[in-house]
Image (cartoon, rainbow, N blue to C red; front, side, top):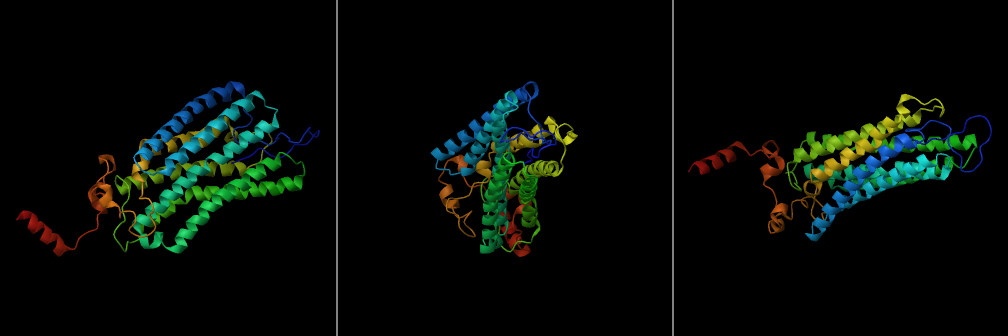
Length: 341
């Protein structure tokens, strides 16, 4: 979420708003380079939007509520807008207002993926440790995290926009501090699902697992760890670039356009298609109105009357043999004897 802010020495530019004179991630776009790349990305994000909206509508017709497919549709639409604005900015490189709009949409989009991963991390924690995941302190902590995402997004967008409308260096320094605080915090949020999942898996369980969705739990965890790792790399790279100040005439290698597209849109496309093609709407689905321990698996009986696509899986299908609660030896022996008879 780097912004190109600050003014170099020399003649005072006309404005406001004022064009940035420090190097930012991706630099100023050009027609020859950015237009074809942004055009290809537009195609991928349009397909991603269509795919997620199709999944959302099909689920809606079957009364299979999964709002997160709609959230990924919204994310793809935000990225479509961001790429359109970058194409426009390439054609009007001296238009500061277009530059502002382009940077706002670049900064605003990825937080939706952070929210999705935090929701999935919360569901995994509640499945492995219902007494912890559903406790009031943990529930309030997650609510605070969701609220803080919105608060930090508003904070960083305000700072980015305001930086285009002032030449006061003291104000610019304070705005930069706001941006650095926000981007560092968002990088931590991108990383947070990883320790939450690790805690869920390695902390000894006091109760049976409250299974949800379809597929093995290890697959859900692997998918979340994979996407959270990618998003953490992207967020960490953007934060590192923001901490470095270079004049616009002397950018570093990490300001290159390739880094901009790979660590922003490349990572995000992998995450969006990984979730959609793996049918995360089935894997991470929970019953409507879940509000306490046991709620995830409480609708098992009613689910048996649904379409085969939405049937409740057996324990071995959902968790795998290694994830089943281990029976006592005597109980296991009795079951074996009965099977033999």
